[in-house]
Image (tube, rainbow, N blue to C red; front, side):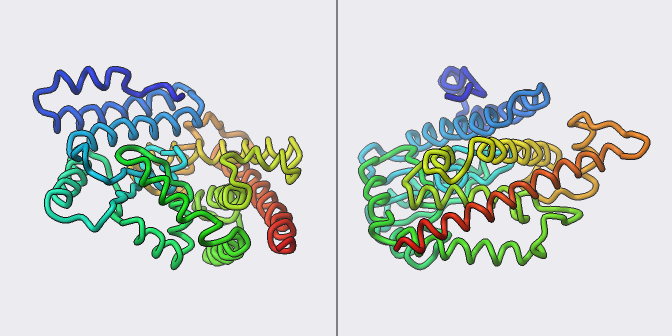
Length: 329
């Protein structure tokens, strides 16, 4: 359980005369706490999960305030937020799952909820779908089924949420072999957009070859085929040695730390490690100029070593997955 960013959250809200201002102030304070803890050297994994946990608490309380208890809807975290991972400026993506197309008071309540979330400073990406619409959209788009696969229940009707999970599972749509093939094509197209190289001078630390998306790709396949929540399943299934697994986790941690610093530095969701940011982050991480190697050069050399190793592990695992998933079917 992550350490709470705002331990006295409910006490503050109960004493507030203006809920909108109280929520807004709490969210602003959470950003300061998050930055202070990062700058003090706290593990980035703890902070990424702590922010997701904090946003959970905000969304759950907002849902309770705006949505009637007899409402048959469910509030669901999807995508990276569904994995319980939120960097300082990451998208807060949610699905509002409903029993029927919203109308009347239910539609008004949902609109008020979303407006409130934006007013208090949460940049929420949302979709409103019935169970049937979720299935239809997921069948048509592997990206949507990927988001739903990572979904996490937050509030409302848990039964409706569980129905959605069953209806979009691999025994209903996108069996693991088809899912794997589609995600491989998706990765191939993404890598091509970045010249099929990890050595871009101003890399995108999420989408570049060897970037965070490559780690997520591995996680998606593990989840779809093995129904596993953690990358450690790769150890249990014999796909990775302990040393390789530790390298995968260390690489993710290093890229998370860079991404976290980048979001704090820019104040927005930007995963491009531009020249102007490379120098600042190198100094922040304690790199110092040497006679033959500037601080920023040392920082980027470590970055390239990390993504090259992650790129190698990604390619190796996809080859092993191909044998285990495609050739066994």
